[in-house]
Length: 75
Image (tube, rainbow, N blue to C red; front, side, top):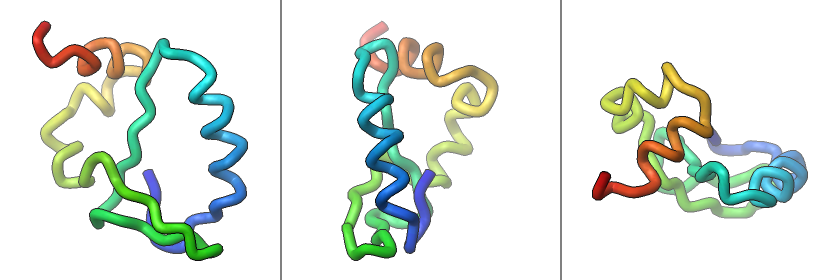
């Protein structure tokens, strides 16, 4: 979850580690369509907070189970 004026240098370390595997899907959620970091980087958001409320599984399960369940919408 990102909000405006997030610290962009911290995300670089995290995203490089998270994207090393295909075991889960990384998505960005916020309260707006785009967020801007302290350094001025604009980030497009995958999900709105209001939509996450409908996906209660997101809150109840870990990221691996969440990504496995939603990675194939035809299951």
